[in-house]
Image 1 (spheres, rainbow, N blue to C red):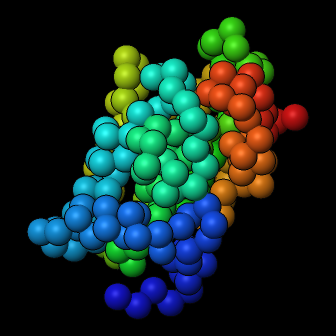
Image 2: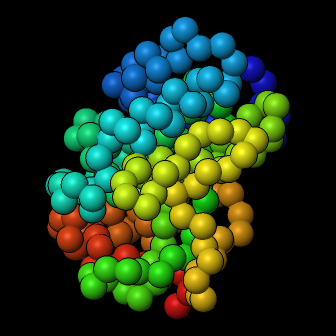
Length: 196
C-alpha cells in the first residue's frame, strides 16, 4: 500500500514505537483475517478502546507514554491510548495522526479546562477519519463507524473546542506531561489547558 504524502503519519518514533516487537506482533494479530483498511483499523481501535484501561477511570499506574509501554501495562490516559492506536495502525501501513479537543473539566481535580487527545486515521475510501479510543463509560460511547464520526466527546459548552489540525507527532506538552508525572493523579492535576 503506497501512501504518497502521508509518510510522516507512518513513521516510527520513540513514542509511536511500532518497530517494537511486541507492538508489531499485536498489530499483525489484530489484522489477521481482516480484509481492507477499514476492518484492520476497526480491529485496532476496538482493542485499544476495550482492552487498554483509561488510567483515570481505573485509577491505575504507571503513567505510560510510548505505545509499547501502554501495551505492556494495559493502561494509559487518552493521549497514551492514542499513541498505541497510532502505532498499531502504522504497523499495518495505515497512516495515523493525532487530534485534540479543549474540554471543560467536570471533576474537582485539575484545571477548569483540559486537553483531550485522540486519533485521525487515513482510510482509502473516506480520507481522514477521527476516532477516539479513550474507553467507554457512563456518558461516553465512542465507536468506529466510518464515514460517521462517533467521538467520546463533542465540544458544546462555552470554552470547549475542537483544535484544528491533524498532527503526525503528539504535542510536546503531552509528551512532557506523561514523561514527568509521578502517577495517574499527578497527570490529572497537571493536565494542559490549550486555551491558556
